[in-house]
Length: 465
Image 1 (tube, helix red, strand yellow):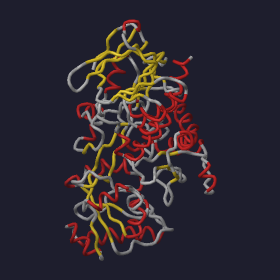
Image 2: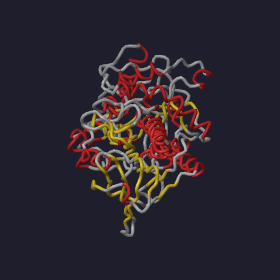
Image 3: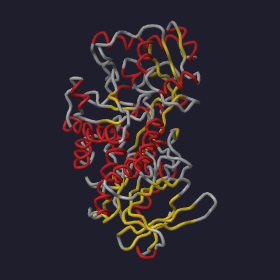
Image 4: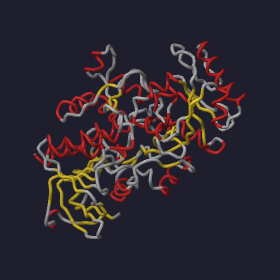
């Protein structure tokens, strides 16, 4: 990765706006820029748009939407912002949080009404950390499905997407971005000039040297994310003199099915399930969130756990494409009794029965258990048939990155913005505070979509004039 000096007039070919990365953030930014009248070139290292978004459930949070109002859900940008800051222990940048939560409802409406994405409000449960239901997703609750829709919308809008094009260098003139160098699979290189540049090229979760340097607690975690997460944007930013923030923040997951790399979504826990280690013992308050749970599992014997739930939870989970994949792969075990489940999972039956009893005692009494978890009293007791999935602690993506302002402009170390450099998604500092415990479900796609939209609109206003 290099930063080289080159004047704007030195390029044989120039486009108004370049977006580096064709994931959820890059395509959203490109759509917004096209809506603003800008010609856009998106550069993607992979053979097709994919990105971290494609490996997620594709759920985007938004507050104060018409669908919430129609369903009697009282929500607002202020409540959403308070939820984010509570989970982040008041550590997220307030101006960016305020902008994102205020813009979130518009993002959903814009994607639905302007670009035809069939997003609907997720029903049936509330994710940990959120006060109300505010998650939107595609019909199959799949990130790959969301990416396909975004790519189709971008093509329809006239966005130029160049795949198999790895950006290897940025060109600057002073503090102004003037262009990029790309390399093709056959080794050919090409220099392209630009009037503005948006970095939407993931975080650094796939760069183990950077992970161990910035987040040493994740040693032993399985990386389950897009391989393009190499930290390019952050390394470019540091070389340019940009500020970085919350660099140790990340989204982990305590539900990656062992040997299958399929996510077991957290409603299995929210609805009354729990986790035990290979000794059959519970070891934490699982309800705090799936990101928090990753390092707790890594600390267990064999770095493994079992997610245990019942038929009712299983029914809730069936709306997720990931869960259906896990069933098809044989990752989900079923038993008619706790003893049979213990045998299938090779767990001590006495310990597993104790774990079931502990969960039921908390649910029935409304009193928190020894880990501080209060099982939901308005849910019925877990009942046969029972299910279990062996899971590991995983790293999905990082949440720290380049400091930005509320217009998605990248900030220098002195707090002033670069004149024509923008960032979003995994390239930018997120809103999860300093570590894993600050991640609230949907933070990744909130910054990918809403921050991407804002970056695209701001950049378009600049280049169109």
